[in-house]
Length: 278
Image (cartoon, rainbow, N blue to C red; front, side):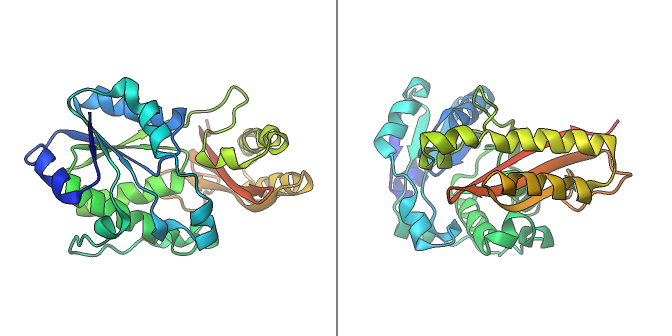
């Protein structure tokens, strides 16, 4: 295993390697991240995992400071995957963010909707760091989870335009036995609220069933939002969207996704369920 922090050392190590499977993370790893690494290992013998807490995708310094920094623990979790072709890249902030990638990319309109509406500038920060990593690493594959559904959609759109040779691989969300989507933010919840957090996915399941029975998406979403708010959540949005463009669905659309973002004890959680109308 190689542990690299220098951009220049990374360039030397991966020079002319066009078969890298890349997994970008912000650390504080859990089984969801490890499933992405496992997928990367199945795609290529050359795997690179980045661990970098990107300040430009946080909406406040307080939120950035609160994000857990667990590098030593993360490396231990990755240890079962180690071999002589496995790279952990944990760059210094000033060095990685100073890298210039040339042509700029303009986010599509949907970036200002859903999570973008409540986290202005967030997706600009995400795409900025993905652009830097893709330009430096030039992977063949890059693996992402579906939990951050809107982010995955935007990264796919970005890669198609600027990095068409990189194949974006998406993996299903890993969940606890109680159906809670695994997230680094779950660790910020106390035991009481961690138990209550399972309500989010159950609410989405109920929303899906409502939509399957009745095409009035807006009314169904409002009912679920009201139920969550009454249970102590601060709901940002509950929405039904078309999978292929994340625009509002109509009764004629069949391939859909239900999405939610809400705060519980001031911890922001998101989830989604893909489904089909028969």
